[in-house]
Length: 446
Image 1: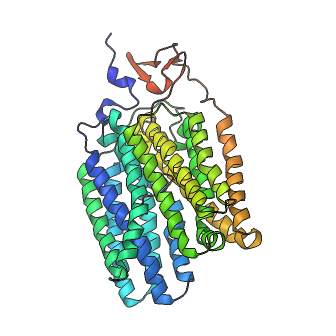
Image 2: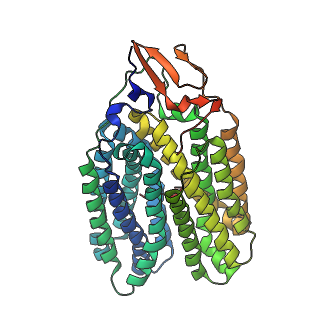
Image 3: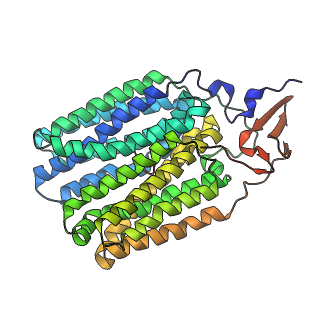
């Protein structure tokens, strides 16, 4: 009996891209991301100019990030049900309207309305992110998946490096509302481009009763995905705690608060370097141990940052940390896209994003609650240590869960599921001698 070889891949044949359309997705993501980072600078300046109080920019950051915890699960579910391009595109168009409204509120000096619009836009951005990630394996071929993910990561990293500098150079000559209006246009363009991709929902597979297809179950029974999810939460908490006191560290340790710009530049440069490496080099497959190693190389320099006394070593530590994050998280995200069934990919991406934003929230709360009591040095060092300790349990258990009765594992061959006179297989279980994993940021480009 002939075997359908298309079923030896994690995706059904109908969900594989018929033509590479990744360039359109990358253009949309790049336009939106650069515009978004211009707005970060512009709105901080705008709110400070309107109120002349430092609490206004602080409230802006809170309004921007706090609602993000609520969006990923909803976004992943909607992406699986209605199609990832529809969800991402509609969210971007709604952000276009909200960002345009911010210009109106700014001209009238209505602070509370600006903050409400920022919060709603942040929520929509977190809804869109799982959909963007679910689009990637549907618009490119498997051999190009790692490259597209590296480009996607590099766009965000470069925007964080370049866009704030552009904002700082332009704002002395134009009103902040001009940059905010430009961001509204970028959201509109991105939304239309993503909608043009027309990535429909994946065909649903008739799973047997008892199959664990929820996002949490998919992640929990895969050691690499479990480690990746834990790394997103733990590293986000440590990084956000450092980010919350970075300007204080620049003023107290390095002599002037303006040095914080160089620190952010080092963060962006490290992310760009890690992404470029993945464009030039095809690394070996990454597994749970590779994720754990990358996580340690990312977080340990954050703790050492609290101990160094010179600006140059501090820049080097931040560069290494972000470069490591770009390397292992981009590869891990690619494995996720290859390994997770298309019909639950949005929800799994939503869970990963939820853990990322939850880690950010935990880090921010810890910084606000403890920095005055223990000081920024102890806070940053303690956050790094606690994040490493919290990460360890995710790397201990390595069993995938009980084997189903219809599973037959043949050494050196794919895992075969015999059902209704068809043979299906999973590349994730393919092994010759030992299990292998498919080749595959922390930052949020929403």
